[in-house]
Image (cartoon, rainbow, N blue to C red; front, side):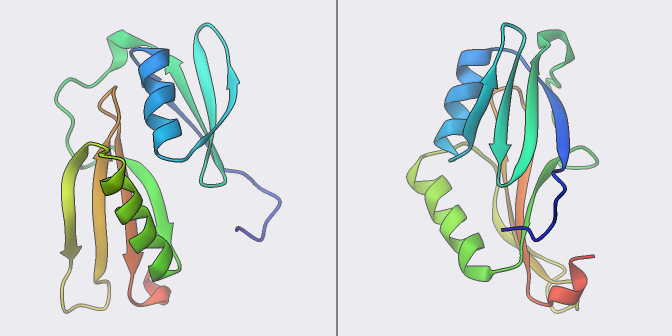
Length: 132
């Protein structure tokens, strides 16, 4: 867990609260609050708020520039998350791959897509100094 007293907050659109709750709970995120127009999750120790805003859903999402996710500092946590996502049959936007192979910034990554087409990236750098 993070050794800080701060929690990062991210607000994103969703098109349906029930399917949003189902996806993020299936991913292992804890539902913190639910209102008529939004849901708040503990997303790996940070706060993600999904606001009901169907008109703001990106119908043709691309990996870049808009996505969010987790950079694991422990390879085993990355592997466990990948295995968990696969076992839960969560929808992949981009299958597991290696980026910048052979370079110092080489990292393992995969992307999931939530019901509102928000892209979630999960990655692990072999060289911890490349995280920041």
